[in-house]
Length: 139
Image (cartoon, rainbow, N blue to C red; front, side, top):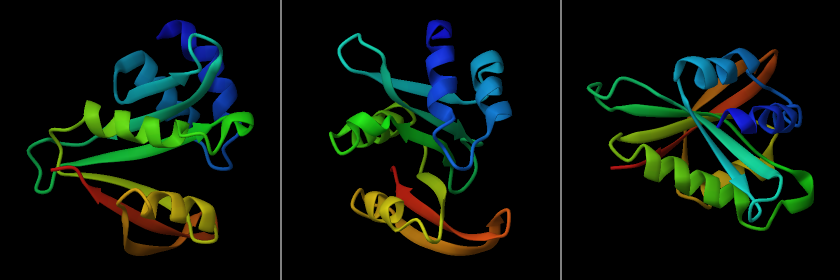
C-alpha cells in the first residue's frame, strides 16, 4: 500500500473538498481504510477512503470520507467497484454514510442509484456551501 501513496495523493488533488490529514492517518496509523482501483496493474484509477466508527454503536457506522476516480476513466464502473469494495471490506457495520455538496447533482444521483438515501440537510457544511448526509444500509 505504501507504493500507492504518491498516486493516491495525486488523485486526492482532484477533489474539491479533501482531507489530507485524514488520508495520512489512514496510511500511517490505520485510522481508516484506503482501497485502490487500478486498471490491470497500470496506474491507479481511483481510491476510496473509509473511516469505520465504533462497531458496538447502534447503528454502527462507516463514513466514506473520499471517493475519487480519474477523469479519463469515469463512467466505466470504477466508482461502483470502489463503493462495492468498501461495503465488502466493512460488512460488519450497519450503515455507510457520506456527505455531498447540495449542488452536486451528479454525485447525489450516483449514490442514489447505488442504494443511498438522503438523511439530513447540512447547512454551511462545506465552508459556507450546503451539503447533504447520505446513508446506505450495509446489514
